[in-house]
Image (cartoon, rainbow, N blue to C red; front, side):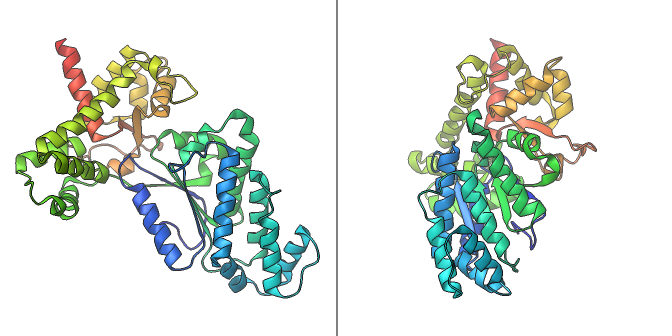
Length: 397
């Protein structure tokens, strides 16, 4: 289950890119909507929500849609012992409210739809007031923010609005238990950032990991190959597909889509390798990376060193403190910069245990870190494959 009966923390849903987090979220949203449960889902990939104004407009729009679909209205009316709290809440918003519950709700909705309510903190304040006015029912509203890492990109001038949003997340989950909040992201740095903003004790991390080779092959056979029956997959081709795609569902599906175009598995896999080579080559020129406001802190030599470390490491995975130590005196800030720019990925040791690497070797010998620190890997199996190829090229050049 994505959420439990009562919220105790913000849920941070994480995992490597292409592991299927968005698919899990959309499935959960569809199920909750079919059961008429109040659910707000904002996918930050779909539009630019890198400002509090844009986020507030979408948040308000989603709430109004929920009110109109009666999901939140039904939640309110089925959880109130009487109308007194709700009427008192609405009366504080505007003129005298009729004692008829429908009129009170209609008056609240008219207030909430007012064009004057545009600032994010005002939208959140009214929504909290609404939730507090309702007795806690058996099924609480759920707020889901997909690709929540975009919140990190808000301008410094909007820090007050960002703080209001994060306080809201903490209030409605851990403190008042008024709603569930799920923040999903593939970016490892988001956990570091959120911990600095609200404290690590206020959120719980849930990880969607990779398939093992057995599960990946089952997924591939069941969901991919039937759509491409004219192109058979010899066993030696599967080994190459597994080496490049690993247990990432989206990479496996991408391989099928490209094979449908080329009618050749070798060409399909090579196109994925070409993409990974382009992505992995970019950090060799850190000055050219401009996707973040913070400039990269590593040098070309340091990235070459990281690629060699991961390529030589058992299972291509290195404990976070070990990687910091191998990078030298600036290891902490260099590694942090790699993670911020999505050059490297952080995995939880518990997620990697009981897995297998690209060659089918057990990862059970990766020790669980008693201090809760993490494991550093490449962002994807395809990029790890590209790192190995680049390391080989650098050694022979």
